[in-house]
Image 1: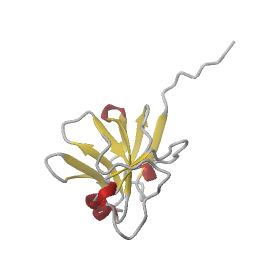
Image 2: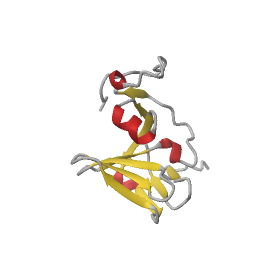
Image 3: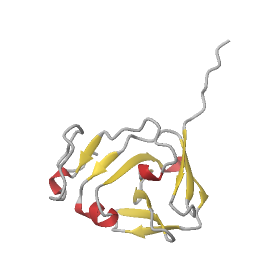
Image 4: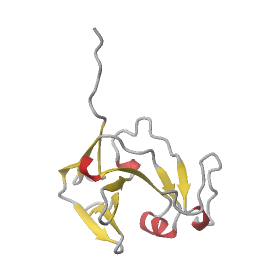
Length: 138
């Protein structure tokens, strides 16, 4: 008799202080690094994002969660207490993204691309081993 595990993958994570905790039930995409000026301003350097279906997100503690409407197109989710950036979401979309550094276990995640490479800061080199796009790959 073979024991087949049909359980969906689950990814847990949260902010530095623990006032935002979440679980994502289901698949998440491998991270993509973003070199755009906006990401560098918001995070102090390059940022990474893993896309997933919004309906897969369950907030287990949202005490510190706040959303910042960046434009009529995107929101950023962060902890109001410790400042950790956690989520990015396009407005009126069924998808969103989590910053992989906030996951408790990154398991087998591997960066699959770099976007907005044409906008990168001049203070660091691009990683030639990771596929590069001058703008967004999506």
